[in-house]
Length: 111
Image 1 (cartoon, rainbow, N blue to C red):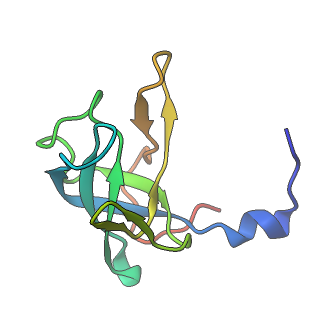
Image 2 (cartoon, helix red, strand yellow):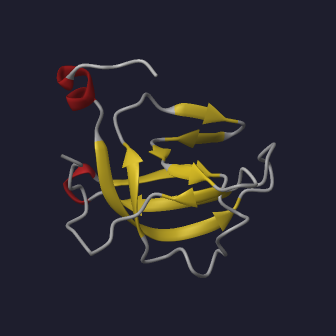
């Protein structure tokens, strides 16, 4: 494991957002959804997430997630991803979203 400095860590914008909507993403190479997330003062942004094994489209709206919001935008096929959804792989390699235990303001930074 490579150590990083506190300054390195502070550069990463890990922020909370609330999923407003989730959509099918049939063009994705691996099964994924598109998610529209409200990051408060940082705006509403779109991304994709390979979370189809543990989540349905219906249960995602209202869920608060943790995302990296200061990566450059990334083109995924015809879709532009504006942030990185974070999560952990389970024993099968399927992603479980990183979420907060209690509701916090959208846009809050992990400290």
